[in-house]
Image (tube, rainbow, N blue to C red; front, side, top):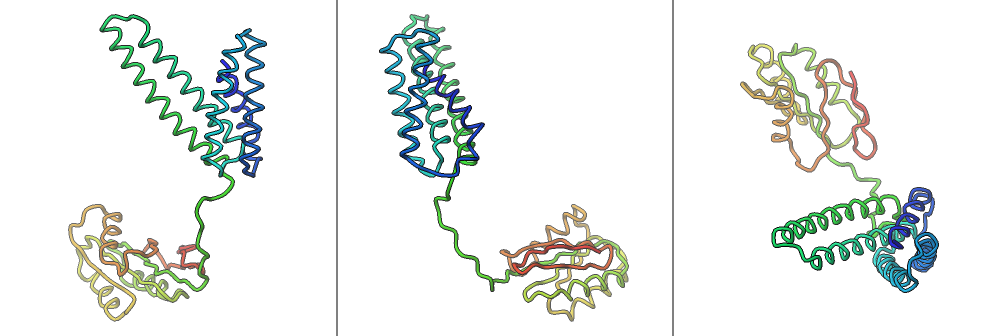
Length: 271
C-alpha cells in the first residue's frame, strides 16, 4: 500500500510541477524520494493501520528503486525521477505479489497454467506501460540533452529540388511557370518537370524543347504512369540529381513565386 500511495503522490507532483522544475539534481531527487516515501508510509499507517515492520520494508524498497532511477536518469528533474521510480517499485511489488499467488495457491494443473499465462500477460502489460511512463517523463522532465549538437554553418546552402508534375497543361503557361521558378535567388537548385500521360505531343513537346537548353532543368515525359500527380512526383525522386536534397513540389497551375530561406528551406510557393 505504501507503493501505491507514493505513486499517487508522485503522479500529483508530475501533473502539477513536471514542466516547472527545469533543473536536475541527484541530491534533490534522493531527498524528494525520501520525503515522499516517508509520507506514503505515514499515510499507510494512519489510514490502514499497517504493521510498522511491513511499512518500513515497503518504504525501503520504494526508496531503493527510486534511488536507482535517480542514479541512471540524471537528465530528469526530481519530479520525473520520483514518478518513474514509484511506478517501477509499484509494478515490481505487484508482480511479486502475483507470482506468490500463482505459485503458492495450490491450484489444479489447468488453473495453474491459466494463472501462469495471466501472470505473463500482466508482466507484458506492465512493461508496455513502463515504456509509456518512461517516454512521458523523458518529454516532460528532461532538463538537458545527453548529446552535443553541432554548431550550424551559416554558409551552408543545401541543394534544393523543385519538382513540377504536369498533365495536359498549356505549354506557354507551363514554360512561364518554369521560368519563374528558374528566377529564384538561390545558388544551388534544380527544376524537375514530369509530364504524366499527356497524349497530345504538340502539348508537351514545346516544353521539352525549352527545357533541353536549360542547364538547371530536367524534363521527362512518360506514358501510362500510374498514380496521377503522386506517381509523377515519385518519378521525380528517381531522376533528381542528389538523393540527399531538400524537395518541394510546385503547382503547375499558374506562375510560381518561390521564396527560399537562407538555410535552403522553401519558405513559400504560391501562384
